[in-house]
Length: 411
Image 1 (cartoon, rainbow, N blue to C red):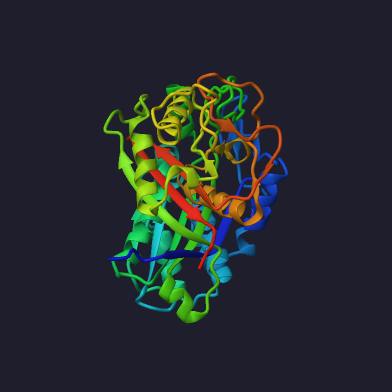
Image 2 (cartoon, rainbow, N blue to C red):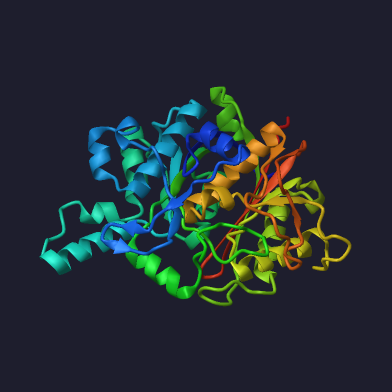
C-alpha cells in the first residue's frame, strides 16, 4: 500500500529574532541575534544571565482581548503562529476531519511557579483560571474552539523534541485516515527563576551567555522562547480545495536512547537511529539530504554526540576521517537560543525556507573549530546552494529523539 503524501501548506513563527515567518527568516539570514540581558526576572537576580527573549510582541495586536487575558505567553506564541499558518494555507478549518496537535516541553511552568510564590509569600489564593493557564492542552483547545476544529486533538510533551514529535503525531493522524489535515503548533515561554536555578546547577546553561553550537568555545545553551506552527494536509485534501504546497513532508521518526534521564547516549546510537528511521520513512538515501538543521544546543556532550550520529548516517561507519560528512550542517540556535519544544517546529520552517530560497543559514557565532565536531558547518556567511531535501533534528531530556525530513514540491 502506497504511503499517503503529506504537504505543508502553511507556516507560522514567533521568535526572538522576528514575529512572523518572513521576519524570522530575515533574522536568521541577516545575522540577527535575539539573545539579550536577562539578569533580572521579577525579584530574582542572576548577574550576567542572558536569554533569547521575544521582543516587540504585543498580544493585543494578534489576539482578542479575551484570549490575551486567558492565555499565558507560551500559549500566545503558539496561538499566534498557528493563526499565521492557517491564514497562509487558506484552509477552512471547520470540520471533524481537521485535527490539531500541540507541542510544549514545560507548558505553564511560569504560571505555576508564580502562583506558588504568591501563595507562600502573601497567602494569595490561585485564581479561577489557574488550571487552564497551566495545562498544556488548553492552547489547542482554545484554537479549536475559535476555529471550529472538531477532529483529533492531542498534546505532545517530549521535552525539547516536542515540536518535532507533534509534527510526527500529526503525520500519523493523516496517514491513519483519522484526519485529512492537521494544525501543528508549539509554544514555550519558560523563563522563570525555578527553571533557571535548576539549569544553572546542572551546568547546562551557557556561562558566558553566548550560544555557540559546535564551536570549541561552547559552554552550554541559552534559554529561548517562542512559538511555531505548520498546517499539514494529505495530497487529496489539498488538491480538492485548491491548496498550494510549500514543501512536502517526506519522513518523520521518533525514538528514545533508553540511556539516561538527562544526558544523551554518547555513542550517538539513538540519534543516528532516528535519522535512519526518518530516511527510511521518506524512502530516500542519505545522499539526498542537502542540509541538516542540527539540534546543536551548544552543550559540550550534546554537540559531540550529534556529530557522531551524523557521521554514522552520512559516512556509513561513524568515522570522521577525510574531512567528515559532506552534507551541510548548521544550528540556528546561535540566533534564537534554545526555544525548547517550539524549536522543533521553527527549525523545520528554516528547512522549508532553505529549500525554497536556496539559502542555507550560517551557524551563527561559529569561529573556533572543535575537532570533535567536524561536521561540514556552514560558517562565516550563508551558503547559496540548491537543495531538494533537508533534515531537522530535535533531541530532548529523557533520551527523546526526533527527526523530520522535508522536500521540494514535485509532481
